[in-house]
Every structure is written in structure tokens, then in C-alpha cells.
Length: 68
Image 1 (cartoon, helix red, strand yellow):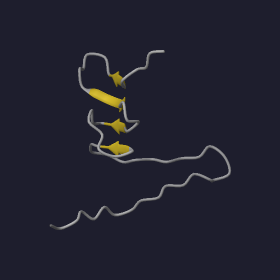
Image 2 (tube, rainbow, N blue to C red):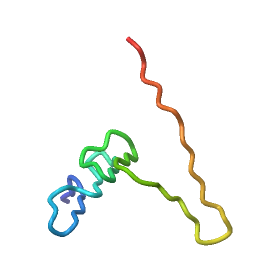
Image 3 (cartoon, one colour):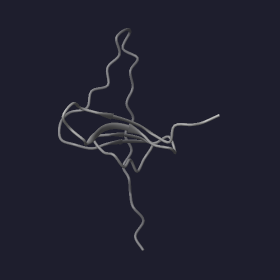
Image 4 (cartoon, rainbow, N blue to C red):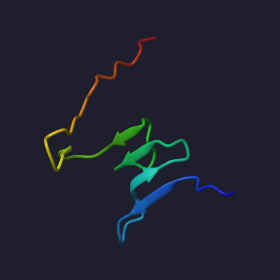
């Protein structure tokens, strides 16, 4: 059985990846090299919306790099 190493979606007339799922399962939007489980890169707003009963949730946590 063969596997796909990664999935990438491109916009017509553009070679830049707009959405990618790499071989480790990390998802990139606006980046072809996601560093996190979900890596969103670029200017603009991000919308999380539920179509019924208002149950959509978005949790954000600060990333605090360790100081060496």
C-alpha cells in the first residue's frame, strides 16, 4: 500500500502553496513549511464560525520560547 507524502493546494497561476498537509500531519495555511500542528501565516483576519447553536471555539495560547 502506498501513501501520499504530503497534500498541497495551489491557486491557479501561482506556484506557492496556499494549503498543505505534510507527511507528519502538520497543516500549513499560507506557508509551505508548517512548524506546528496548525500553522497559519499571512496578513488578515482569522474567522472561526459555527453554523448552528454557537458552539464554535477557538483557544489560543502564548508560545514562550525557552531562553538558553
